[in-house]
Image 1: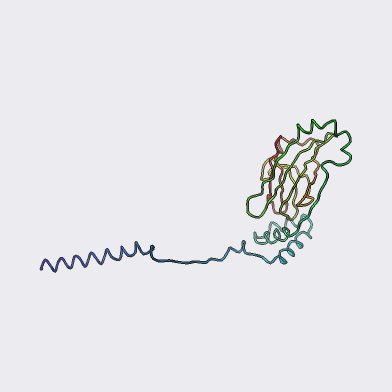
Image 2: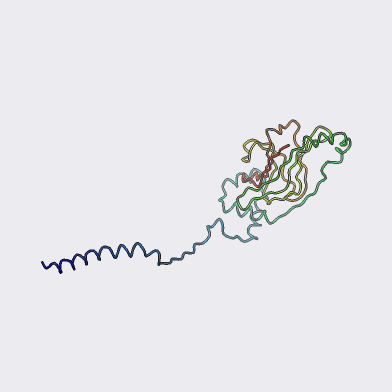
Length: 220
């Protein structure tokens, strides 16, 4: 076979292999693709009226029924209730001490200063549940103590409680009661004998859904 013809055949074969590979390799540099995916259903914007109705329906149940219902709810249903609760804001402003404890307080001012524990609330960090403000453990003149929330503000929710806990997961806690309001200065009695070295975290906790809204580590 003529060498010139053979050379041409070899060049054609090599080109047939190399050129497609080269095009496939560099093509992403020249091809532009566009995609627009919808938000996941749990992140979709919901109708505020519907959310409010779901919240009112939920809180109309007794506590046992709410706890049972919460176990059967999807995340979207829980979000609906939370969004409905978030539309409601309550404010309370209580004095730092109850009137009956003011008497004789001047004699223990120095003690209060030395024993007061404080901490700043930090939100849950999930983009929805939040709490801010100051938490203070204040010894009173009668030997008892209160946990005081100052300049407090949090997301609202169903059956939100204030806990003194050993950690942020509420694995071991003392329940100080249902949150009086999601805004304002407020006082909560601490059961006598509570070990504040052990229960050193103040939690804003949704009892029905077992969700943390915010926490404050109490330090002297």
